[in-house]
Length: 215
Image (tube, rainbow, N blue to C red):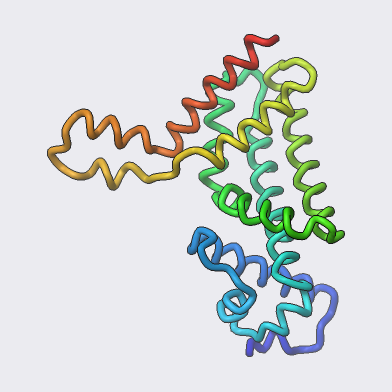
C-alpha cells in the first residue's frame, strides 16, 4: 500500500488523496472510454485497497459524479477563457469543439453520469453534482449570449444544443484512415464525414444559423 495513504491524515493530506483518486479515475475513463470502470480498478491503479477509496467516496456513483463536476468545470472554464469580443460564429464553434477535444473526459463521462442520475437521483450528492454542472453551463451560456450578442435565453439554448451535438457527433480519428494509399475519391469523402471535429462544426453551423434566423 502507498505510504502516503497510510500516514496520519491532516485536512490537506485528505484533500491531496481525493485528488489522487480523481486523477486515477479520470485516467481510467480516458483509457477505457467507459467500457470498464470500477472502484477496484481505481484502487489498483493507485496501489491502495478498495476500503481506502471508500474513506474518501461513499461509493462508485459519488466518485463518478465528483469527477464529472471536476472535468465539467475545467471544460467550461477553459471554453469561456477562449471567448472574446468580436469573434465570429465560426470561431465560437471552433473554440467549443477544440475545448472538447482538449478535455475529452467531459463528453466521455456524460452518458455514464446520466445513467447514474437516472438510477440514483434521490441521493443528495447526485443533486449537488447535477446543480453544479448546470451552474457551470449557465454561467458559460450567459457569457456566450453577451459575446455573440444573442437574444435573451438564446445563449442557454445554444449551449445545451452544443453539448448535445458534441456528445452525439461521430467520433473517429480520420488521419489514420486517410493514410491508406490509393483510396477511391468517394471513399475518401465518405471517411471525411466520420471526423468528429468537422461533423460537429457542420452541425454547429446549422444551429448558429437557426439561432440567428430567430433573432
